[in-house]
Image 1 (cartoon, rainbow, N blue to C red):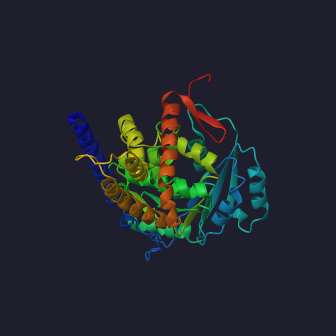
Image 2: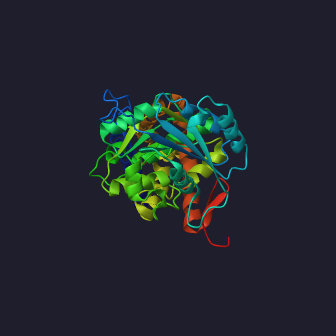
Image 3: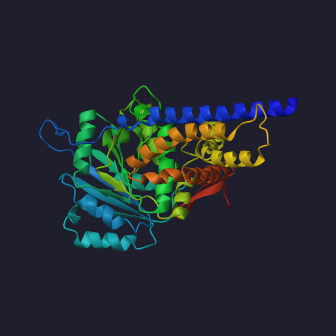
Length: 414
């Protein structure tokens, strides 16, 4: 009897400790990532003109490898900006699909093709380089701008995007301005996975910390990075040893900028830039798998803590109702004095799911995801648990991270 009593006491302690942990997690998450910290990237009244009234020349660099699905929309939107002092350099990084043909058509037929230059690269990478840093580096060698804009081939840019972001950067006296973008989420898997991805990124890299010069936290959104050419050159650009072979080129560039004492700003550009990152669950899995281990903060110990904690805060709260059913089925004719009752489990369920669903509904609203996708939270948690585990396993054991037909971080000869 004493042993049973002690077991029930421990189970009750475990239950309410979990309740306290889940509530605390979502409260802290809200405090770190609340949308009030985002500041809209709007056109400045001080348009950012130089003393002589000359608008800074901007070089837009687009690395593209097998982007036939996206490249036309992206380049057309860039060629139709309402700013008149810029060039667009598309770096065709050894594409084997229809990307080269589409770019040739744009050069031949677009009304503003005089702004467009296509740089062709071979498929083979120089030793010690990753694909995207190498493509951007090669693009910068052809660029003439006082400012450099790095953007991805799967983006779409509103006509005032360049003008607005440049004005914002000049007004903020930013050396690197990066914009958060609207995530286009047309499919079920997009809407399941993106809120969980956003949760993890914003938890590790809260906007308030990124924009605080006294904080070491730094990140950039590789879909839109506007950087002063003088700062980029001073840092050595992507030819810098710590940047040339990275798969998290945006985060590492931002960290280098901030570490060297330059001003980093992360702003809300959802009215200016749209992106559809992945097409289907398979591509999304592979895309997040290449980043999540390398892009996590806190080292291996923190990553292990994430692996343990994610099921606890994303999946376990939804399993508590099953405990009610089990406890009712196993309940003795007379309830033991210290036994956890179904009503107690029900209260714990409400206390856990309340802040969880409240946070998810607000987050889903920010991402324009229907509110009822909050109930896919445990599915997203389970999928990202697999992505996290596989990402760590492939990098730590050097099994290789594959992306766009290339392998990184694998043993020589494999």
